[in-house]
Image (cartoon, rainbow, N blue to C red):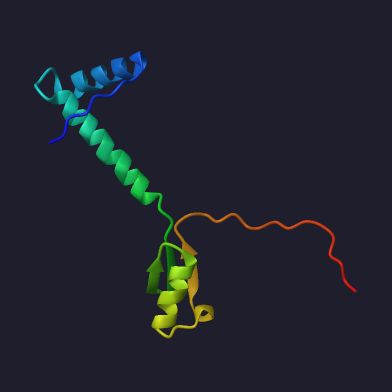
Length: 105
């Protein structure tokens, strides 16, 4: 078990102490429990924010990767045509908006 020394603002400290008192009372190690629980929740939120691309053929998951290049490589290894699958991202991808003049000769 590690020991950390941190500095936080007074209002955050007051809120933290209120939460600790509310959840665990004044038991020994209560603040450590609350902080550890909060950090675990924060880390799980960070994990969920990682972008994942999934390739589906119908309802079947064919491949999954963290970027499109990796997904394409997996699909090639499985001899799956990328045009035959539906690729879905775990995050919303902003469409590319292109504006300007198109020059045609």
